Picture 1 (tube, rainbow, N blue to C red):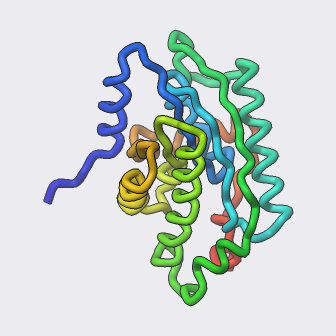
Picture 2 (tube, rainbow, N blue to C red):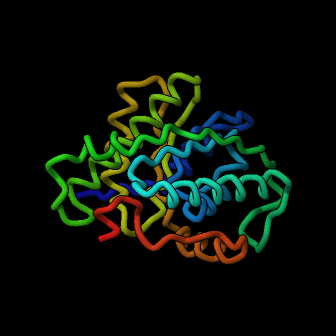
Length: 213
């Protein structure tokens, strides 16, 4: 059985652009996860971050993560890069941010009946699709060339399942899903380093009441 190399597929897609700079809507779960992803993407795409996470069921936690996302993007847009993770010889394209709808009821309705599923199981897959579907919808409505998610950065998330859902949604919407596995090539390790360098708040749970337990 051949195992797909999603990171290599992403690199091959990027290499096909030549001098073209497509638009990309990047769903972000949090600033720390977005850090390494944005370092990898901004030289090649006009990136807009979509912060849509109704699974974060505590309002204070949601607002804290959103503010960190805003703060991190603002630093990047003023050229305040740190460390050695960004190739300054490459072009930089300013990052925009869309505050997604915050309606936790959408999450609770979607996972009803799956409350007792183990972490990383079917409840999480439903949550993946809820957030990716919104990203695909917004990307389609606003005319983005591609959409993607930072969720593939986490070693606790199922990258194969995320990419399966994203590619299926590509068939329903005009925007193309950018396959990824951002944890590859030390992407997750880099996100930890960047979080320290930018002093980003790193949460210790996914966001929903079930992961909190």
